[in-house]
Amino acid sequence: MGRKTRHVVPNSEGGWDSKKGGAERASKHFDTKKDAEKYSRDLSRKEGSELIIHKKDGKIHRADSHGGDPNPPKDKR
Image (cartoon, rainbow, N blue to C red; front, side, top):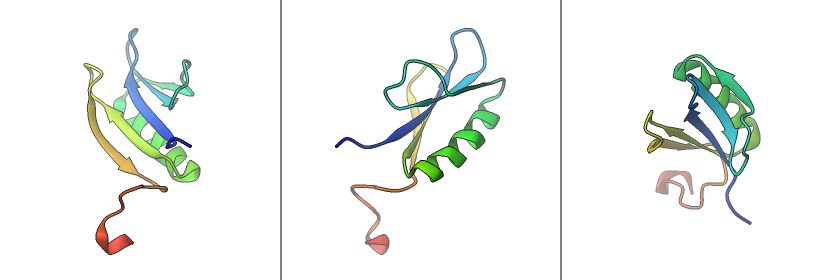
């Protein structure tokens, strides 16, 4: 089974989207990246998924794990 992910991605028509990993359509659209991150972080915690935040160019900016991390920090094992 693959890891569960949630992504904050730029929308081609402006603004930002929250998308479940592998989904074509956004779960929700936002005008600001900050609002998309807050919504996505809350969902990611509930889902126990990894939150992947992208830059405007689509490249990954950072990732935060909210459960099921295959390589947790040594102090969390």
